[in-house]
Image (cartoon, rainbow, N blue to C red; front, side, top):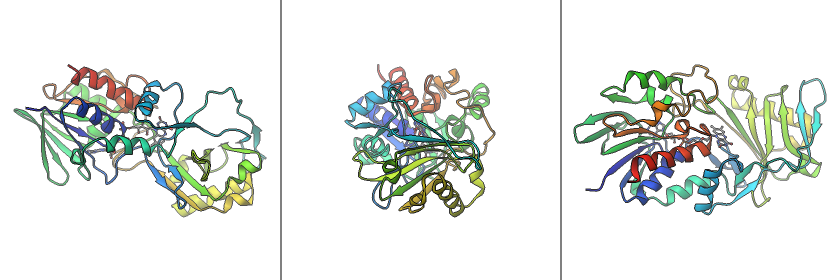
Length: 351
Ligand SMILES: Cc1cc2nc3c(=O)[nH]c(=O)nc-3n(C[C@H](O)[C@H](O)[C@H](O)COP(=O)(O)OP(=O)(O)OC[C@H]3O[C@@H](n4cnc5c(N)ncnc54)[C@H](O)[C@@H]3O)c2cc1C
């Protein structure tokens, strides 16, 4: 009988692993809690269909496994635009400092069409029946001949192996296991930091790159305004224009209309009146229930990512953890997700 694998989570790690498992001629089902795939990869279309990143955006030559995957999937990369005057705003009552990024600097890349192209491509290589949306896994039981999975809709699934491609901290608080996970592991799970939990990412779309025309790169770092960090977000074809970046943590206290107003105020001050004339503004506060649940205690970045207990098998070697936070290197990043999948696949499936 064909081995049946259930993958929990349809983000980068879950979908890439599903591709590898399927290539190894095993039956695979991905259960995704949300009504969209991608998790922390979340590309939206602006009003002019500009690909805008509310989640993961950049990578570099330091990320060889991700680059190899992009190559395999025939997805194109392009450098982040950084030519021209960049701004550093130290105090709101002083003019910003101006600086230039040297051309020799290792470039950051983006994916042509948006990071979401990676998710769409991985999903398109799986049979439609292999992905089940709106299925939040709530319980995993050891059921003699395999594992039994129960979702929020009350549906039951059975599997020879279950791979948890979700943040380990989230698995610890949102899934009930029977028998219970060993205490050593249960103690570690709440302390595994989930990368970017709590971040606030914004996108703005414009009809024209007015900043480039005025000699600016669109890059901004600020200690003074609501925008902490910002970059040019022009598309690969250089036909659609905008910015993306991060707001400071205090922004969480305002409704979106106020956040938009404060962002535009800051940009008009720094880049002129044209910055106020936007096609669209959107932002996302990454504290939702499918990224962090319950335990939101501040943790050090990447704390306990790649912990040895996350590399082991549980429930008679039928249950495994595999997402970016389990990676022993580059934990938290897309590169980490790719590495975690390749490591898990070679240790659990390629024999
Ligand atoms: C704002 C932001 C900016 C970022 N920028 C970058 C960047 O520039 N470069 C970079 O390399 N990385 C960046 N990252 C990190 C990158 O997005 C992640 O490393 C990567 O997407 C993680 O993929 P994953 O599959 O491991 O986890 P996730 O993307 O978290 O996927 C987990 C999936 O599981 C689902 N799920 C959760 N619980 C359950 C359940 N119980 N049952 C079923 N499904 C469930 C979720 O809905 C989600 O789809 C950023 C992240 C954010 C949030």
